[in-house]
Amino acid sequence: MFPLVTAPVDRTALRFGDHRLTYRELAGAASRLAADLPSGRVAVWATPAPHTCVAVTAAVLAGVPIVPLNPRSGERELRHVVDDSRPDLLLAPPGASLPAALSDLPLREIDASPDPHTPPLVRTVDPESTALVVYTSGTTGPPKGALLSRRAILSTLEALSSAWEWTDRDVLVHGLPLFHVHGLVLGVFGPLHLGGSLHHLGRFEPDAVRRALEGEGTLLFGVPTMYHRLAEAVGEDRALARALAGARLLVSGSAALPLPDHERLTAATGHRVIERYGMTETLMNTSVRLDHPPCPGSVGTPLDGVGLRLVGEDGAPLRADEEIGEVQVRGAHLFGGYLNRPEATAEAMTDDGWFRTGDMATLDRNGLVRLVGRKSTDLVKSGGYKIGAGEIENVLLAHPGVAEAAVTGEPDPDLGERVVAWIVPAGPRAPALEELADLVADQLAPHKRPRRLHVVDSLPRNDMGKILKRALTP
Ligand code: MLC
Ligand code: AMP
Image 1 (cartoon, rainbow, N blue to C red):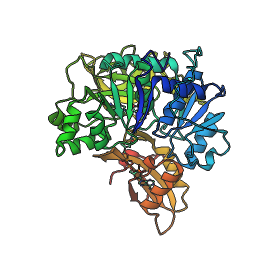
Image 2 (cartoon, protein in one colour):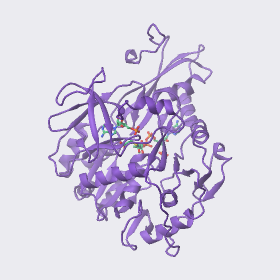
Image 3 (cartoon, rainbow, N blue to C red):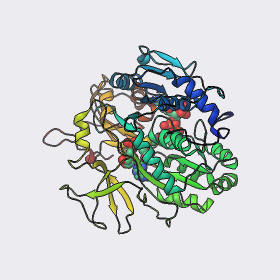
Image 4 (cartoon, protein in one colour):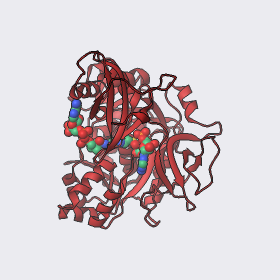
């Protein structure tokens, strides 16, 4: 049963530092919690800890939708998520310091201690029902809650298992956050569904990766920033190179892995990092398959069950090997819409059921997809996090020293892209970068803070008054 399958009960399911839970102990701990969960949604304070895994497993066993919360979210972002998703209960580790935005929610502490005694809860749950509500930034306004069904999650995990020959023999290693689909769906539900193990690093550090791969780890997941940091370290660190070389598979996703990082890692380890392409709303769309030759610069071919096409400006599908078009996908892996946002859901879909990703790509005769950019200048991918320009602009505009604001992304060797703020000051003294960065970190989240500030006399606008972001160059 999703996500706990038929793994031998005494196999390790999860490991965080020295904290290990076997399948039996996890099933017991999760079932203990699941037995009296309310039937509405539950929010989970998703720290990178076993508590999060116990909580989400409990909710999946009980058939209750989960709203994972980023524990570094600021007040404004948390209030929005809670007001929008209206959870009936908050699950958090004992002693978590919870912000005021959550004070109205009934709280239950998560007991993540191994429980070999409580019998597994067995409940029949509709595969079409929502398992997760994952908040994701859009071009404008606050983040939207993507409704992910059990069927969609299962479909993506089965497709990845086939593409990567990912089985119950694999021990997955990663240090990803547990409130997005990469760390949570692939990184927690993946091994638990397949009957393998997860060794979570708590936080990403090259040294922790080395130790885990020197141990039992066989598979590594990360965003390109993590692989960039490994590529930086691996030249000097022979032990790290040996550990990475000993892994069965290194997989990168959530943003593009630059070719120089690919090359440095291949030179040091003999492995070509496998890239896969996904999105919160679609889960995984494409991947380089294990049984295909390496294809640098490509995110591979559509996964099993994924329909993928490229569409031109006029909305008509393009033929393979033609120009650049927008990627559109359909299949069982798609989300069920945005919570409380029927118009946004309708806008994201074509009349015949394709999801508009907003990503631009080419497709060759062999079905290989190469991503070349995004339709919108209002989205920034930094450290693998998607960040909407609009939500940051709204926070900047609320500062009394800011008269006008625009947010863009610019290339960054470590983060892929970094957030850049452009402001027209409201008075003679413009606020400093640190002040604006702290404001954004407090209100939204630290990864959304601007890393660079340009103070300008005016912002370039078209006749309609819309800011021309492509004209914003230093
Ligand atoms: C600095 N810091 C501040 C601050 N200035 N905090 C608050 N206010 C300020 N003004 C702190 C940061 O919080 C952090 O603290 C530290 O300084 C460094 O921050 P950073 O520069 O942002 O980098 P780092 O923390 O090192 O993070 C890099 C990273 C992270 C790669 C580990 O970006 C990451 O985990 N990315 C994963 C994103 C992800 O999972 N995306 C998947 C989306 S799903 P401290 O205490 O932490 O050091 C998706 C679909 C798909 O995309 O296909 O997968
Ligand atoms: P999110 O909304 O956070 O789920 O981010 C989804 C977006 O991340 C996609 O629409 C792509 O733009 C980007 N993305 C994911 N995987 C890759 C990849 N392998 N290469 C390039 N971009 C990617």
